[in-house]
Image 1 (cartoon, one colour):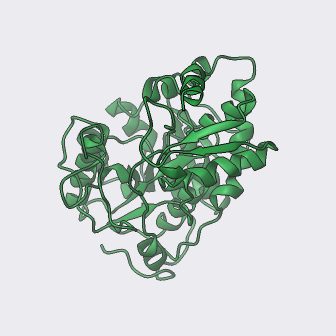
Image 2 (image 1 turned 135 degrees about the vertical axis):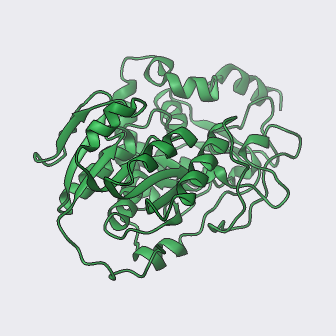
Length: 353
């Protein structure tokens, strides 16, 4: 079923099952759906409840990797199943197997599935001249990587392929999320500038002139897309990003403003030098996505801009860091990025300029 125009579906009281409900997107999605009048079953491995959720949200403990547990969580059926934790072909087939009991699905994918017209993508970025040169902005028609199980990106592409092929049995909205931000993130890019400010670093080095742009995506905006897609079954692929795509220098300045500090930027014309000038947003070419399709198909309007969402994110990071080594507080971040805070190397570079 194609995506249809906004307002073509009659709103009705319905049942939604949310998988990965206590993750960063899941918490916001459960809240958005419940407050919009849905009967919500929040499924997570821990079976926890967010204090902000309405009291009538039903909480279920289940591991989505366990087919029987997933089937039991869905129970007699639901109108929409929202999946935050599907990563590949296996999870796609799990969802399709539930088609008789699930009216439609909304599934989180990633902008990392895109590749440029020369075949470069996120998996080739470490190669010489391997970073993709995407069009600005990227539409959903942009080509994608070959599906497989070799990486996060190819796994998401495989997920998309399987679900789209089964769209006649299980209508699915795939949301290609950008650089996700908000509370409860296990790899918050904002940590880079928050910790530097807490450590009293009042000078920062930014590669590529501080102009890198990696489109952020607030959990609140993604939740709004989920809320709009849920009562409008259809098989579609939509980008899921914020209305603005600030540069890394603008992000740094916005975090400074939230924390009440002033920092001097030292801008490098080119790439990082032995890691100096690198950040979790640093890219040699922009990654900026188009949101026209979501506006046209769902009547989507963003609920928050990047800078306006920062106070909550910064406060959450500060609280999590309090009295802890950052690698203990954010082990997944350390595994993904390595030592983000090599101040000695940065100071040595500055002295040698």
